[in-house]
Image (cartoon, rainbow, N blue to C red):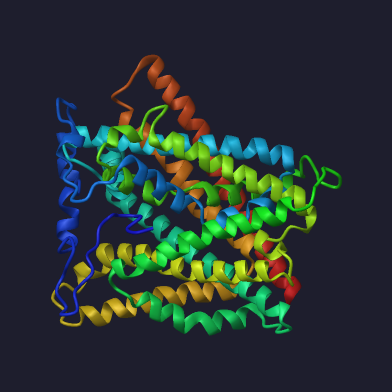
Length: 471
């Protein structure tokens, strides 16, 4: 999850000087100001791919591996519970449809970046830059909102990354609680969150991303091993359709929608990965890297979601790891190791949030300060503390996943890409092409808006109701 949102690093060295990409100003070297709106004329012969300078480019295989790494997180362990909210038939079909929509919107965003790079004659852009450029390239009434759109995208990216980090805290404490309960220690999940707070802060004080790489590598192997353990327990006994519902009530569907969206979407890493590829042309297209990776990812999500639900039925927990036997050594070991793996992932997720907040909003305001290092550690501690407070306030994994899926990914992944494409290309396409673009983007926009408003409102209602029940 390194540099998922920006693919830049402007943190400071131990002596207080800026490193990486030097400073916020350099990072914004391709910033698109409203004064340059008139420069959007013709794509000409400029080819962005030919001008990208990547020190260590990613191969096609590297890119697929990173896509898998970012898509196979805590969300996949919640897929059986998502199928409980939809039924096995609706879940099967719905996951395919949502996977197709999510993939299509990613294509829209990547293609839009390429289109705008040609217009602006820059080699690459990140998500906020693309949003800004899209509004500047569109009809004049949108120009004045270009800068605001950057902050909107940043806000949702921050919400997504911090929200994901909160989910990691809840996931860790839920699994640790289950392991301790098997030995007779019944510790409340909130108390466990307090216990791991200091270790999380210390872990997130690691300022160099390369020092987190070994933890990430170990975590990947642990995740693979956990999948094998889960499938072992799923298939060791036969399961039937008896007592399993093919479809659920309409009121339950938003939970399914938001959970699947959270699980599938890796919108924050898509553009950095494509920008870092040796052959970025291979990323797009009907048989490109993105489609091949998403096909396998959706298949794996359906596989675990369907078989997990058919195995445990309505007894399925917010994360399937809790359904594993409470006394089997193998199951307990898997839960403990998964918690360790997610512990490292929390630091990677927070790294992205810290990167956005630091490079975009803090560093440029304290450029002349001789206490940059102190400010950075304060930011790191503050973001970790925010994830802790939110996790303690909402210690229910299923509701938290649904809420973040509705608030962040319905917007970043489904709503914004078609909106930005429509604005950017409004005056540049016509006829049937324009009608097709508007129809497609209107459909996806409605789905994104519905997911945002309905999903978030129902999630908040469920959170409040569960809180009242506990109190």
